[in-house]
Image (cartoon, rainbow, N blue to C red):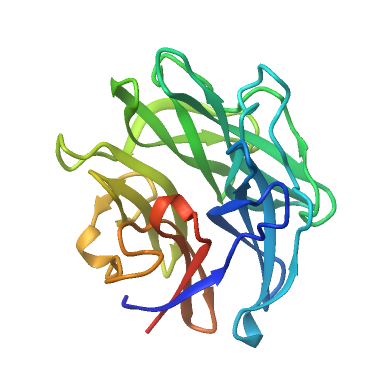
Length: 298
C-alpha cells in the first residue's frame, strides 16, 4: 500500500476555549456509508485536553459538514485519573450506543505523568458522552504496573479485544518506555489481562510504541501504531489471528515530509476504507499541534 499525502485537512479553531492548539489522535467513527465523524482532542490555555469532533462527507472530497463548538468530553473531577485531560483513542458502535475509549491524563510527582484508559458512552450519536466510570477501565495490575492507556477495541465473534499501550519501565522521570499488549472482554466493559505482548521493541533505543489502530481486512489483521526513538514514525504489523503479530514497518510506505506540519514526526494513524481506497488520518509535528493530516492510498 502506497500513500498520497493531501496535507492538513483540519486545523484547531483557536476561538474555542478548549481548542487553542492541537487536534490530537484522530479517531474515526463511520456514521453511514458516506459520513465519518472524527474525534480528536484540542488543548485549552492551560494545556489540558478536551475531546471534540469534526464530521467529513467522504462522497464530497472529505468536505467538513459538521464540527463541535463545545467539547463532548472534558477533564474529570479533581483527583480522578483524567483530571488533567482526555484524549480519544477508539470509538465503536455497541447497539444504539457509542463507546468512546479514551486516554486520561494526570500529572505525576516522581514521574512526569500518569496515563490510564477510560470509557465514556454516548446515546445521541456521539454529540455528548457520559463516563461509564470515573475510574479507569485499565488500571495498574500485576502484569501492568506502570501506565495503561490508549485502548483500541474491536469486536471479534463473541468477544471484545483490546490492544493497548502498557508501560514497560521509566528510564527517568520524563522518559517512559511502553509497548502494546492485548486484553479480552465479554462486554467491552470489564477486561481480562494476561500481559500478552503484541508489538514489542525492535531495539533498546526504541522507547515508545503508541496508539494501536487495528482493522480486519480481507482475512488479515492489520495494525498501525506509532514508534519512537527521538521522533515518532508510523509503524505497521500484520496478523492472521489478531494475537500473534509480525512487525512490517518497512511496508508502511509513508514518512515525514521535507517541510511543513509533518516534517519531523508522524504518528497516531487511523485508517478507514471508502470505495476501494484507504483513507488515513494522522498527526504530525508536536503531536498534532497544527491539526489533522490526510493521506489516501494510491
